Image (cartoon, rainbow, N blue to C red; front, top):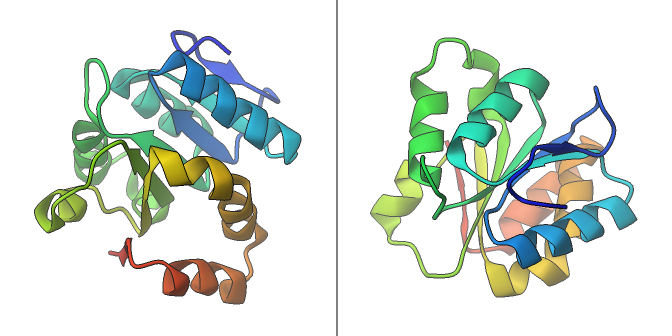
Length: 154
């Protein structure tokens, strides 16, 4: 997967939007989701994030914080402010970053249920978390958010 191009694993079906500008990490994330049988679309910048969110209305947004163009902060703010996104304010958001975020930064990045992960821990837990969020099982979803200190709900 080239992170400079939008990619939809299964056209017309997109449960997860993945936004990552690092080529190698984008390929790793794509392989994990594909192996787990998860339908996803991917992009590499904030503008693509907004376009994919509008086009597909996914259940999960997996968002890098530091992106070319619009940052992850800008993407979340645009979703919050755009009247065309009323149903997306409750999307499950997985924020991944290579550095720790302050409480203020976490508050700026919160949409519905939000999970903050470092890029190093994300690779081992991603498919389990995404499957649980997509399952619709409140018990499974609650266990993800209860078991991790880096979570917030709007």
